Image (cartoon, rainbow, N blue to C red; front, top):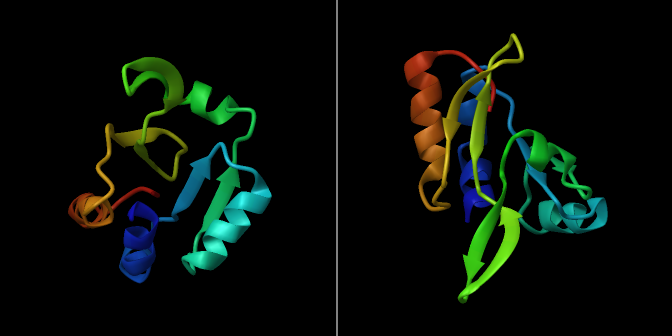
Length: 113
């Protein structure tokens, strides 16, 4: 749902000067299948070893059906042209999130998503 939202707002987000990158611990093959299935016009980056997830602090303990497991906390980072994080959207809800990011980018007029 979140990826489709970013697909549907892609051109509007591009107009802000932002670049969309999706990162997940999936394999490149799984990501390619996902990208093709949902016709995503943006790049997906594979983080199989979860190095990016650890570096950005999104590999966290989660509670799944009463059992504690390590998982990825769905998070969006706005990274500016200088390479510094300008804004963090923690605990993202998939529905409507792309529009939330677009509104932020339009309001601030800066950054990459």
